[in-house]
Length: 126
Length: 107
Image 1 (cartoon, rainbow over the protein chains, first blue to last red):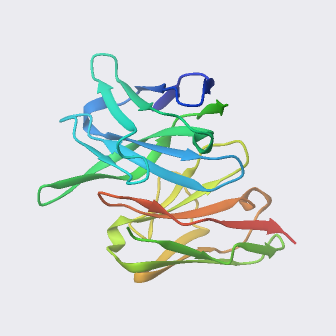
Image 2 (image 1 turned 90 degrees about the vertical axis):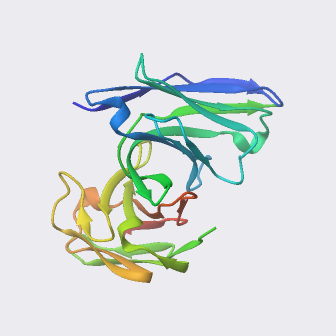
């Protein structure tokens, strides 16, 4: 069965970096992309970005572009989200999700996020 | 960036009633790239509808989606206790966005 298992909760200082992992199993890893979504306490969902696990291309949300890097290791079927220069409003639960790869002309992106990880709470303290 | 506005923010209904949730986009969205999710407290979101009207695997037919262009709707035909949750619409693209969510609560 398809599973995405994320790394454990993190507490970081203001200005530090965090790297969250997402280990996939139960499907052909490079046939799907991985999307990252976060949710601040009591708030809605915020799309952060997507990585094509086959060709490593990425799309990032403008709000976090420049501070976030998505990577993937197909030898271990694991995706990573690194967020740098953390601030208090980065405190959130971070989710990874399996995404279908959809391409229009030469532009590809993730769609239909059908399996999700359990979430990783990242707390940024001052 | 495409902004999705969901209405209402909160929907208070009784079990057995019909729920109609709206998602309006700031510009036209290809209906193939519009999805709906359900989220319960402490859980990850669950994909309900993709392509505006296709049910995801294992989703019961009490959930249905419709719409095109800038206006999309999620309908839950007869609410059951497990359907009280928050629902989000999402549009996909090189920059994806979510609506702010609609909470369906027990009246």
